[in-house]
Length: 324
Image (cartoon, rainbow, N blue to C red):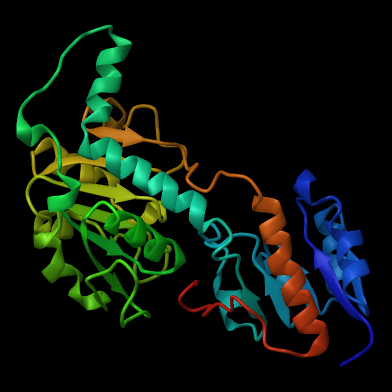
């Protein structure tokens, strides 16, 4: 390959990445890093760019005649990142998967345990200074007697399953790509087994990315298949669950409760009925929060920059047509 490879860090810039340009150039001989501040400057820089980091809308992509690699800044970029022009373009795309697996898995377990022990209701009672214990055995879910269905057994889903298994929970999974033995899982089946497994699960935990196949995955039809009295947890991507259908299923008493960190519309509108339900726990898309996030993302970018300059295969490659 040429001794000079140009990588463009696309705006808008996160202040936490201010030092990335110098660090990359120092660590990767032959790499020239540009950090344009405006869209106009980015368009000019992309004309000679071999690679880019960030979000590349169609109008900027049109300027990138030499581009061969795009590093997405997230594991699951927001809707619209994989637009038709990008999918059709020959550029390789890599993502940031497995950079916050531990944080998201811990958050998922916190949501699961909160639901299992009835904490959403007790938190509301605390706010009213009301002492209202529920001593009915059915008021809690026994983790050691429960079956959890993990929908999406990637890095995060696999870690969620491993942690659940430590409580004695029987864990099964479905995944479009992964099969075979996974630590903590009784079995992992193809994605088309979802409808068959939903009626058997006490916990349905979504970790799947937003893709053409998973958009609206949990709609009214599938929510009707869920075991009566089960709990739904979504720490994957918001568009996988139809929120109005979920609210209707909760109102009908089909589900015992739900915990959501991601939503079809973010922020969740203040007038949405899910806010006021005592059987729902809401966190504002914070499952990935935790230490070392920027260093982990930089490590992926650095590894791929080294591989790209050396002409080696990149890590975290994405199937652009499937968005992950």
